[in-house]
Image (cartoon, rainbow, N blue to C red; front, side, top):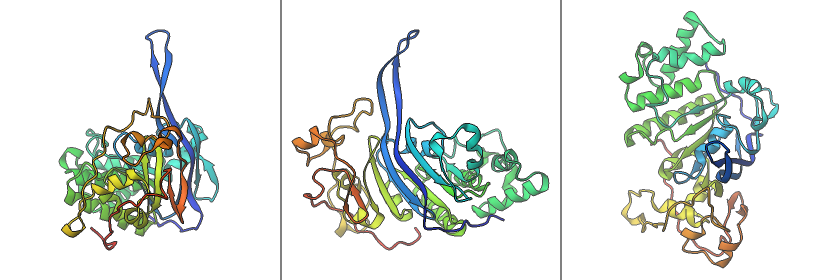
Length: 350
């Protein structure tokens, strides 16, 4: 059986000053670094056990790179990723050697964005879901088949499906298989990298409800990465908004949606669909494109697209500071502006 984890009041994950830079190199023979892509640029946050932190932003803002650094799919350039393991010890995932990471692979898992490319088309479902169990010598033979059958039932699939190949399944079913694979080793922390963005809206709701049910049953902790704030609203306890490698605002979900403090957050919220015509407001269209992470603007990275920017914004980079209790924002004019948010409905299943 897959047993729920035990709750605690201490943070499960603490990310401090996380940096991931990619060098830009030119020259076929004598390679020379001519620049740097600042994919993740000094990101800090904590996640409590049993909590879901939503990490949102436009494509190219660095949210997926941050998630991959946390699971050590890629090596961070700098910063620390303090994770409290099942024994209660804190380890810095960012500095561990590959051999030291292996025990943590059981506790930290990832659900990928594309359910079509994340499953090997040449492997049966029994092999895809059972591979983590075999590699870690957890189960074999009849016990392995029983564990795979249990995992498939837990994500809403029939055990008979384990003899089939991925091409026989729809996108939503494939994502359920990916979730079952992530659950195989009874993890405590899951990075969900846009797990519903490639699915139809009706299927998105099913997968979100499944993730919420699994969280309650197994006491899982999520870092939920997305670009759609209407999705993040229903699953996240807190939301962090990223722009060009930096977190520009972070708060409890209801507080951030109803009382945004950063103009970028307001612009993202204006694109959230509102079923009630009385609540609809004019969408804010940002001018220009997302700043180039290899050639970032001076001062505030958002100032070239911000209608509220002044001279200070182009000269001085703002710091992520507490504007209200638990509400962090990186904006020089946060205390001056009165921005429009989005009223949240009841927190119920979609």
